[in-house]
Image (cartoon, rainbow, N blue to C red; front, side, top):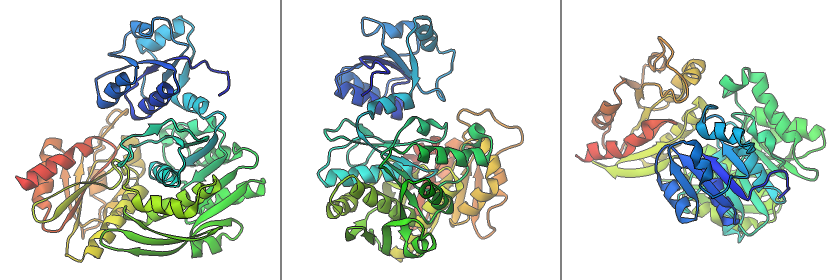
Amino acid sequence: MNNSIDLSRVHMIGIGGSGMSGLARILLSRGMEVSGSDVKDSTPVEVLRTMGAKIAIGHKSENLNQLGQKPTVAVTSFAAIPQDNPELVAAGEADIPVIRRSDLLAELMQDRTQLLLAGTHGKTSTTSMVVTALQAAGKDPSFAIGGQLNRAGTNAHHGKDDIFVAEADESDASLLRYEPNIAVVTNIEPDHLDYFGSHEAYFKVFDDFADRINAGGALIVCVEDDNAAELGMRAAQYGVRVFGYGSSEALAKHSGIEAGAEILTEAVGQESTAVTVKLPSGEVSYDLQIPGHHMVLNSAAALIAGELVGADPALLAEGLSDFTGVRRRFEYRGTAGDNIRVYDDYAHHPTEVAAVLRAARDKVSAEGQGGRVVVCFQPHLYSRTIEFANEFAQALSLADSVVLLDIYGAREKPVEGVSSRIIADEIDDSVDVTYEPDFSAARTTVAEIAGSNDLVMTMGAGSVTLLAAEILEEIQG
């Protein structure tokens, strides 16, 4: 680690958040002193306390004194913490350096082989597959993931090996803080336009990210995504070594990119998808438990990334066969009634929604029991809903029945005249659509629609995840 930031005593504002709590665990494992604050108690907060962190509930200036002397640095997530936060103000008055969460992650990755996963969609799942595969291959990487691994039950770890695997988030351009040895770009599609302002600015951040790859490093791109493939072509012209992954047809189309992981076969079964991938070292086969072609692509990226950091491909493939997913990524929540299965997913962009619903459709078809796909979707952000209303409608038209909740505004204020109806009105006429503005009534609405052998999906980045358990109760009741 370099000496630009003193991490001996770190105070973390909003320490219970998924990203912050993970980095706090790594700091504590490395012997640093950690204090923090959050608005409420939570399981991550309790875990950190058992590891030695001093954490206060509620934001107050005196929280900076929990370690007995002032922190050497304060960490905040600028998107979530307002600038008038009393701890931020007190840190400024006490001349305590204030850094972003991405700055802290960059410091923690210093002097390690940095394997970073970027892209509009699929970062968390792909990062999780890389970690699981590397662990199965006998590696012990440090990692920081945006979601919890189902099997490990954690989203961060301080490993013994020199490999550090992490997501590189583009939403606020924080990925430009990192200097990857190996970078994966899953796909590129305009998003977060409330920050970037234009499609061009959004695309440019990925070019800038590729420019930060260390000499001798590599860029891995999905050639089934034209924008990612074009990024790879540009990077190759600047001397970066680029590997592509995807179908044989897509790799042939982009012959200027070296084939890294060629998907030879992909057979969807009732319980898993049988996959065979050709790597530079030879072919490997595995059974992927998480459905969907997008997950097959993610697994191919994990294979080539793992091979590039020196892991045995056969053992990587074994790890992928054991991969049970990430919380809120096609996460199985239970079965009730007459074989009505309920899953939960974080998808909140049209491309993600479409990919998950195609996976659900493939699963139901493979089962051959006549079930339908029922989705309860909660749009996330007014700006995203307005920008992609038609695209959301097209994606949701892949379901048999749609229950649309009202928009989860998160950090945005309501926009007059804008509701989920602007999506509902554009969904294909062949789909049964219910607009349900009453969140408390949604559990009953979905339960009444669901029938024998149906697959029910709660979907979105907001509070909709709370409904999965309630829907199961309602069906059972």
